[in-house]
Image (cartoon, rainbow, N blue to C red; front, side, top):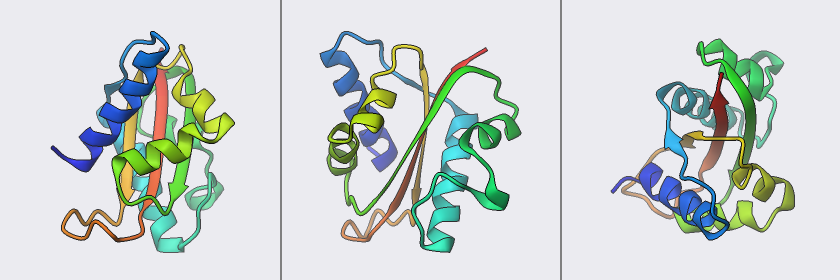
Length: 132
């Protein structure tokens, strides 16, 4: 299993606890999240503001994904799937995004992606949305 799959499984386990349907991975949301994780890694700064001052909704729309609801979580410092999901679940705004009944699809970006170095400090970007 990949780290991305592990995170999505952990997110869906949290949603299952409150009887919410599982999130489905979406390629456009994956691209949005990965590009933002790489941007934060290049800048060495945790931020919801992206390249050119972009907002998460602008980044999602730039991929051609049209949505009715969307949210973004970012994180720095977790080394594994359980750790990053726990960080988000311990933060009320991030928890609310994960447990938002309106979102149905997910994208996750991790940078740097070095599965052979589990102790590396990673930037994480989670994009959640529901298609229009």
